[in-house]
Length: 261
Image 1: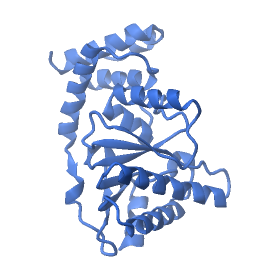
Image 2 (image 1 turned 90 degrees about the vertical axis):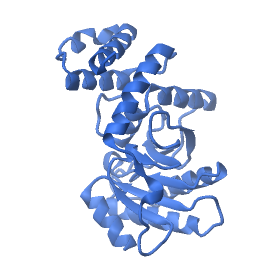
Image 3 (image 1 turned 60 degrees about the horizontal axis):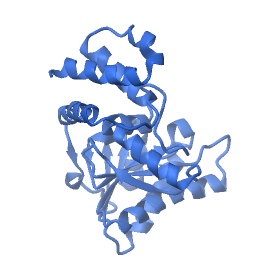
Image 4 (image 1 turned 180 degrees about the vertical axis):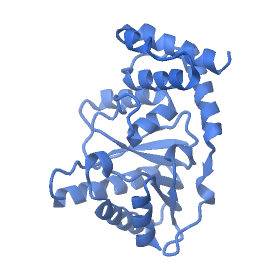
């Protein structure tokens, strides 16, 4: 199959599973960009269900081709900041990073974003990793039996991402003024991810800007907490030898570079 045939095949499988979206899907033109947007939308909407081997094979081919087209960034090659040889700052798409683990900022359901093509980091990571990620997260949450508390961490495979694993954590949602509990829970997110990574012998961990954006934690204060928590952890004798602060917006890039030199 060529790329268009793959996209149409995958979309038809998902529409057979979710026929309630047939009418909306018919409005998408039969051209590459539109069919790819439809595929991402359907993948975002699909609840955890058994996955067919043929679907996964074709899905993985499409995602692998896109991964190579975006370009993979070697976390080991990123230069350290002047103030700490174990910390790097990199501005770009976290789904391009070949690190031992990247961090996903989740909601308490831990199943990824169900809003089609939403701009959050959770949506980006699940969309690039593939539907296997939602399935594994669902298995974890079903076994747990309750929503994920703030400040904890879970580890899954990364599937079609260049990273080896994904660390999932739920940060605090700020409503109004930042409270002491908000600060403690955000610090716990960074600490829990690093502790879990160290338990598994991982060496490079890339963090997104947890709780900023949709969860409204002020960017400057969130970065200060992130840097302090990571720097304190890196004084320990663990397997972790590099922490990457991945930023996407210029605002966050300026903040982290100001804090770290």
